[in-house]
Image (tube, rainbow, N blue to C red; front, side, top):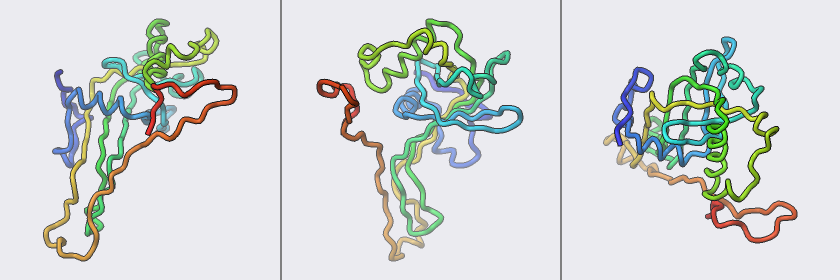
Length: 214
C-alpha cells in the first residue's frame, strides 16, 4: 500500500522523526478514533467542531444538520478548506524535569476541501458506515433512516490526500545529568475502555455480541 506524499501543510518543523505518511498507519488511527476535530473558517472567524467520523477507502465523512455552519459553508463551488485531526492518547510520560514531561500518542492531520455529499447512494453508504463503526453488524440490526431523517442530515466528504500521522512512543527522554535526581520517572499507560452496556427501557434480551466490552 503506497504512502501519502508529503506536502507543505503536512511537513512539520520540529520532531520530524515522529511524522510518517504510511497509508495503513493513517487508516488504522482514523478507524480507531471515535471523534475527530474539524477546523474551518466561516465569515472570517475560525471554528473547530468535535464530530464523529467514518472512513470509506480514501474518503472521510462527517455528518451534521443540513443547516449547520460547516454544511452551509461547504455548499460553495469547490467545497470548503478544512483541517481534520484525530488523536489517541496512549500514555502519560513523567520525567525528572518539567521540560521532558510528555505523552505517548498517535495522531493524524488531514488538509483538503470538504464537499457536501449529494449522491443518494453515496450518502446511504456513508450513513451506514457511521453505524457500522459502532459495531460490525449494527446497520442491519437497527432501522435505516427515513426520508425525512435523511433529508435533515448533511454529510461532508474529505478526500485523504494531504495527510500525515505523528506518533510518540517509548519511555522518558530525560537528560543524562538528571538521571540521578530523586524524582519518580516513567510512563503511565492510558486507554479508552468500554463499560458495561446499560439497556434502554423496554429492551428485551442480552446486549448483542458486537457491542464494545471491557
